[in-house]
Amino acid sequence: MEFFGHKKVQVLNGGIRKWIQEGRSLSKETLRVFPHGFLPVPKRKHIANMDWIKRHLGNPNVLLVDARSSNEFNGKKKKGHRVGHLPGAINIDWKKTIDPIKGTLRGSRDLLKLIGKSSPREVVTYCQTGYRASHDYVVARHLGFQKVRVYEGSWQEWGNNPHLPLE
Image 1 (cartoon, rainbow, N blue to C red):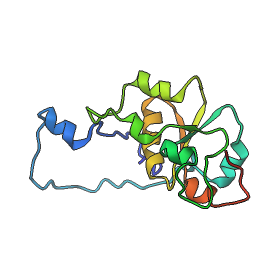
Image 2: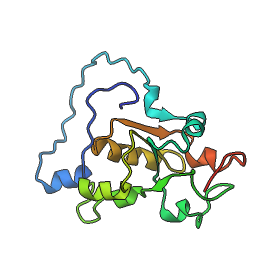
Image 3: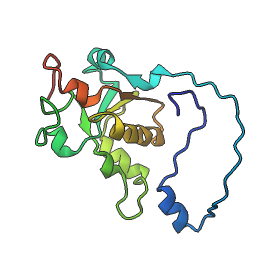
């Protein structure tokens, strides 16, 4: 939604399950929707491509966050021609950002521990195809990072290109 220019974007933390557990109202009525005239204008500042990643490898102001499982990150599970991760990336498996009992995002203190001592100006998330990276994008925004991108090619692109560096 931010990519298309929406200014007020929110995510229901815990989903419909939490909504129901909290006793919030539900309805089966069909709502009448009125056009608002929103014109989507893509904001490329929320996307990183392969060339952007190559230019920023090793930049201490950019934190690369791999949202895949630790087995994918460490090369124990192969989902491409090569295994490993982008040079300098840290692994924040998207599943580890969710409290397994509550089904909500973990507390900010716990989430910041996953990032470690890094204090980047910009966060770039990736996974295999961008799906899990989108979740970690939301986590980074939740933590207050203003500059967050998703690497659109993710490991599908990087891991299958023998000319690109990896760890």
